[in-house]
Image (cartoon, rainbow, N blue to C red; front, side):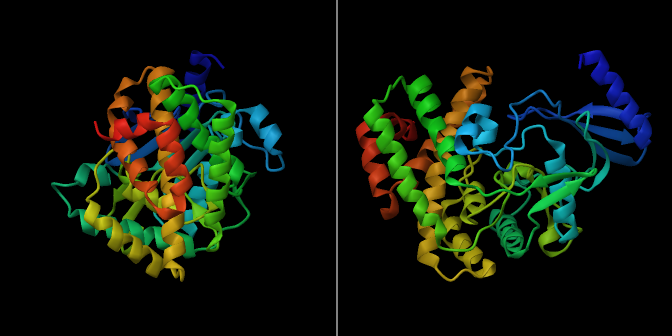
Length: 366
């Protein structure tokens, strides 16, 4: 579809939805291929999501083998939804039905990649902290919402617009594909390190053993990008609904420590280190988990895995996509990673990093 064809399709969508006369105010973009536009029509506002279908590699078919996923590309390997709006719309409905504050879907054109969403406002956690809100209070609310999501049951697939989107497992193939971004982009393109086949095999074998630590509690819905830039404070709503959720289309079923790591080991802002221990304990208690030590080990494994992934993604955004500002965040993420691998559960990985990837430890000291 050409740009002019897409513009006409968008105009037709907004006309059908009753928002043709609204003013359009584009929001600043980030790492996503999606585009957001705030619509203003008098006292009413709504949010337009524009996700062109050809902007990313295809998503993962439910029955694809690891080999087939690799052939399809990174989105399929890592089980990302990409531009598939059935995932966002279906998950939004499922979350709202369970009392959580995802943006309600007001209108949709899944074929062309348009959603009209409830506007949850601008009170992002990241904007409120530290001057307008107490960090501990906001983060406690986010932890309580996360625990409530974990306690909730979700179907095997969500529905939207007559289409279905499966909630698949956050499996070892997806976890490894993400961790390998560290090797390809951070080591290979940023640090100039080329690993031997033996070292790469050892890297993957270490992670495979580490992923065995993720079986200590039942899996739950993992939103995969739960942090201060994606959470909105909604003080007029009560309990878990006071935390607005913006980014969840890539959700899978996996270990609950992943989203807590996303929140507390934020790549974009420094979270008070004194909050980590009590908030982890709060989550374990609110989520109804019994094995605190096992959860702590899983938290370290997923912290290291997520931060390895982000180190790779940020270099990829800078090198491939020309978004050099992401390099400024590498030291913070490297510090998170260096801290995670101090856990006894990751002794093998710690030794491997010292032998083959000391550049990340140097990055952590910048």
